Length: 323
Ligand SMILES: O=P(O)(O)OC[C@H]1O[C@](O)(COP(=O)(O)O)[C@@H](O)[C@@H]1O
Ligand SMILES: [Mg+2]
Ligand SMILES: [Mg+2]
Image (tube, rainbow, N blue to C red; front, side, top):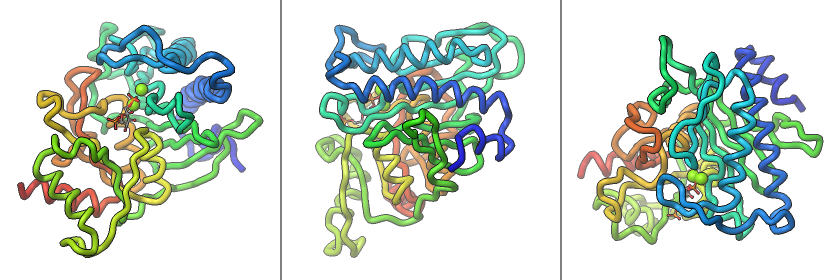
């Protein structure tokens, strides 16, 4: 089985990008180790802090964030990083070529119950020209991403990676190497499985209520077939399932926070997951528009998300367009 860096060299990926991905994986391996020890290393539970989005930070949110920040900023290729857990972007080498955004630990409500969590990342290039260090360097649409991926810390740790030429998966071996385990992953275009937090149903737009209502009606409704439902409350695990066997995942706008486009974050969750899903032949939208074409206005911007098997996402969009 091929090593991650050999595979990327073989694919003729830019050597600096390979070096950056290797650096990211160093951090993810460290996070995987901390997670493995659980209660034994005293890393479970909540901290006394809240992040910029007003969410209580788990101890492991902070640890994962610190590991990624340190390892990445030690690499001179990195100009700066933006994290879900930091108020503003943090900068390293002024001559660095790359910008990295990350959700250090996605699905952190699952840590204490020993259910899968993950690190989601996106790699951008510093735009041409002279720029001061500021959040605005990161405000590029998802179409500008050079690479994106996640490491899912499940029963085994697995990296899903795209550098803009398909999606490949690598499993973390006991030797500490990521080895190629799935090449050219594709999302089936149709599905009978959906993932959404049904407890928010009464807050959704009528179009979303109608769409999900028709899935639930199954063979007795207009879709004339039965659908199954999953909700892990860990986007990284839901996307991994979709990359593995298809499906539809949505965290839509809801009226609990009417002024907020959605719960998930554009730069740390929406864009990287959209790039992976699109590169695997799926679709990723806000229910109305392609996520990767959104021009971000601030780094912590939120977004409504509906992604997965292409034909099912198109059906969901038709419900919204017709409403
Ligand atoms: O608890 P809810 O409202 O169902 O939200 C679950 C969603 O929130 C998230 O946990 C948000 O990510 P974080 O854990 O990084 O804040 C997603 O992974 C998941 O899809
Ligand atoms: Mg998250
Ligand atoms: Mg998180």
